[in-house]
Length: 430
Image (tube, rainbow, N blue to C red; front, side):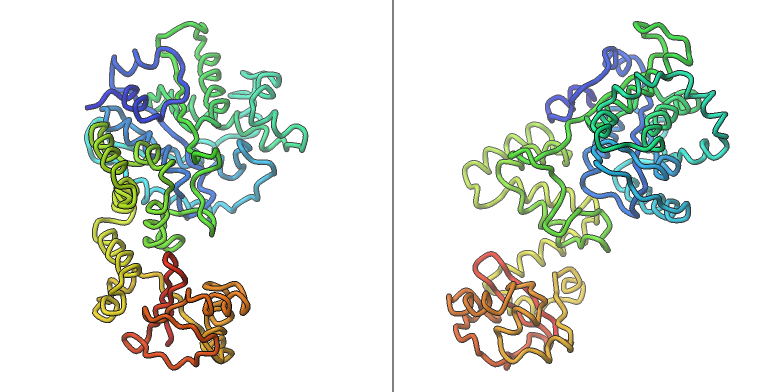
C-alpha cells in the first residue's frame, strides 16, 4: 500500500489539508468521501481528478465513498458559477445517478473487504427533513457572516445569488456531518474550489459535537487537490466541441482517445501524474524517452491508452488505437478496405445525407456544404484548399475544384478525404 499524502505530493495533487490529517491516516483505516452532482447522465474528464483522489485513497488502504448528490443536485453548487443553474426533475436526477455510479465502478473496488467503496445519495437523508427541522439541525450552527466569507458566495454578491444557492454550503456541510455520524467519515476531499464548502462541514461537525477548535480526537478533516489547468493557465477538460464525457454515446471512444493523444507537450507531464497510475519511476523513465524523441508522443500515448482502457475497456481501446493508426496511415485505403465491422464502428465516420449530396455538383461542394462545413467552412475555402494541393481523395491529390464526384468508394461506401497532413476524414454514403 502507498502513503496517501506522499503519493499526492509527488503527483502534484495536493493543494491544501487540515493539519493532523497525516496522523489520522497513519493511525487507522479512514473513511473519506467526495461529492458528485448528478446534473448530467455522465461524468466528464473534469471529474476525473476527483475520482483519482478516491482511487489513490483506496489503494492506500482506506475506504472511499462517492456521494451522488440527489438532493444538492436539485439546487446546484454556486462555486465557480456566474449564474443560477436550471433545476432538474427528480426523475432526471435519479437516471443520472445510475449512469454515474456505473462509471465510478470502473475506477473503484466495491468488493474488496473492509475498504470497499460505497456510493451514497444525500436525497436519502434530506427527503425526510422539514424546512424547520433543517434550520434547527444545521442552520443555527453557522452565522451568516461565516457563510458570506466563503469565496463561492463573495464572488456572486455583485451579480446576485439566490437564497437557494446561498444555502448550498449548509446542505453540503450537513452531508459531512451525516456521514460522520452514520458512516464514520472523517475526511471530505474535492477540488481546490471546494475548500469553503468542505470546511463548512468540518465547522458544523465541530460545533454540533462540541469539539474544541484545537481538538484532534474524532476531528473531521478536509483535503483539496489543485484544479487541473493547461500550461497557459486555461481550464483543462474541454475540446472544441465542449465537454469530454466518459459516456461513449456523448463522446466517442475515438474522440476520447484523441483528446489525450493531442495534449500539448507542456501539459502532459502533469496529466500523466494526475490521471494515470504509473509509478514515479515509470513516469520519469518515459519522460526521458519522450525528451529524446518528442515526435513519438510517448507520454501522450501512455496517458491516452491508460485512461481510455479504464473508461471504455481494453478491447475498445485496442480498436481505437488501430482506428487512429488507420486514419493517418499512408496505407489507409487498403486498411479500410480490409477493416472489420468492429473496427469501422470505432472510426469517426461522417454520413453524408442524400439531401445534401443532391446539392453537390463537384468536390468543392462536397467538402463544404455536403459535409455541413466539417472539412471546409465555405466553398471559397474549399476551392482554395483544392487549388493549394491540400485536398486528397482516397490518398490521391486533387487539384481541380470542379472535379466531378465519380470516385471509387471503399467497400462501396466510404471516401477518405485528407485536408493537409493532420486532418483526415471518412465520409460514408448510404
